[in-house]
Amino acid sequence: MKLILASQSPRRRELLSYYTNDFQVKVSQADESLPEGIAPEEAVALLAERKASAVAQLPECQNCRIIGADTVVAVEGRILGKPHSPEEAQEMLRLLSGRVHSVYTGVAVLGPGERKVFTQQTQVEFYPLSSREIQDYVATGEPMDKAGAYGIQGRGGLLVRRLEGDYFNVMGLPIARLARVLEGKED
Image 1 (cartoon, rainbow, N blue to C red):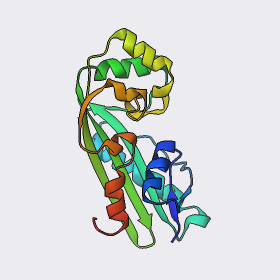
Image 2: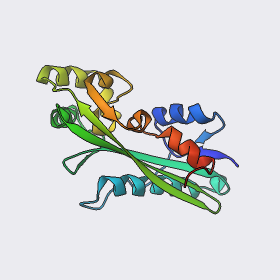
Image 3: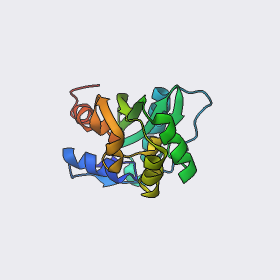
């Protein structure tokens, strides 16, 4: 059965390739709006399932196994998605500076007779960041397409004091757990 990744993220493509190179990418046009007050864990599960479902509706994907995923950063109950401006990226990084936050990724695997959705949480602590460090990092452009305004696999990794949980989850796809789900070793 053909495996489809419903994501335009280059990081998710890279991570899925650790498991297999035998997959295709179809970008989902799913609605990514969220109900007011939704919990981060529920938000990522909902969006992952929406993305996978949208691709599952495509005629060429009717008999495929589809993976959808979504990642958010949350601190103090506030969900931080991708920043819309450099100013918003700086605001997010100031909020994360010197603190522990959670990274949630929701993953949905859909196929004929199959519907598995799970979430993964990782705790990340940032070093205290000066205004200059924040400005310099935002000036690289790296934060602009990443939840929480940082990429742990790039220069954003220099902001991280420690993490507890799955490193790849912070990149956007908990690939070890996903592999177990794909192989039927875990629901």
